Length: 468
View 1 (cartoon, rainbow, N blue to C red):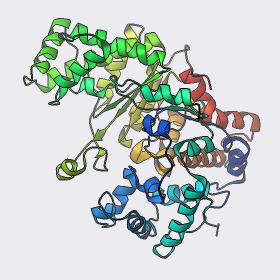
View 2: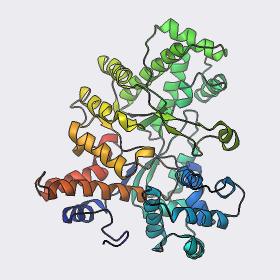
View 3: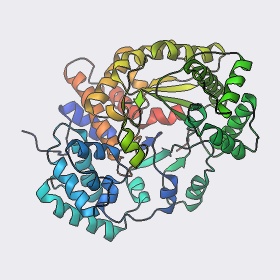
View 4: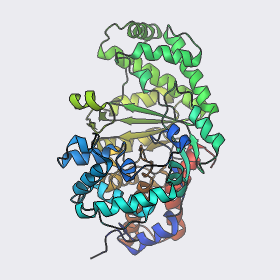
């Protein structure tokens, strides 16, 4: 029986061990999509205790605690931090099979040098030891990032954001990583939301343009994109429930937009026409600027109305959707390709039923201008666990070029999440090592080592074109 989480954790063959320790473990991290708060990174305040680090904003842990019957007062409520930590440990003691069990022990091991197994009867000991280190070393956001060998961080930023905190981070110089913005224009697409007209007003103010028609909207968007580009942005991101595609004439789109500004009701088809027009206009500009377009789709958000009204969005009440995506995605990408304006694109599905849809879609639009121009994104959200990651990589290997994969991202609000890159790298090396041990690929260490290091870091560095 293997020891729990020893140095060869999750590495089941000699080849996997060699690939991980010789090639993967020490590679820098290129975190091209996350939800870390730039203001928190700039202010760089020390954390008060382990609960703030473990449970602050981490909805993966919140969902698990709720599933174990923990009262909300011990999750997002007003119970003391120590009691919240005890409740978490009590629940996690029985977390067999859940990746949280591995992630949390990795967090303790890597950042606190604590090997104690999380249990109800060890909670107080872990609380005391972890907090002693926090207080003695003044653990701050920068310390976790610098210690994790992170080279690039791309945050997630609204088009109207001033990006002032990115400027201040750069001036302060306390981060070894380059902290860059990423363009997240979701609110521009959400014309069905009641606050859409107010948001468009704010967008116009940020761009110095009074927006009264669709043409002026595009001018404002492009103005903000140019500003983001000057600030080092080289990537966009879209969170979509499904992939829209319904084309319309320019006058028709303008009428739809003006109706939305007036608060008039729109049909689902009209909404789709508007969203298609926005996505294609954005795609053209992404191509012009050399940006990467990321499309995350397949989440049904805020399912629990009562808890949404109590806690708001991003609190652990989202789940997997099952929209039909193949045809609209094909038409969206092809409409840009016909114009010669299809940007580098990363496709993510929250529903693994679509893995082969995306895996085969890639090959339709690849180009010699960039290796792996169209990417199948890493296992996302509910899929960033061993089975989900392995399935995504096997799908990509079967249908495309795994060797050109841009690898892992954190997609997290937690400064401890960089251990998940280690988790991914161990899974990657175990998968490749197993194929070699089974005689399915030669034990050519030059080739294997290059594949591992490219997926861990080099491919992303080349793909995004960000110097680091």
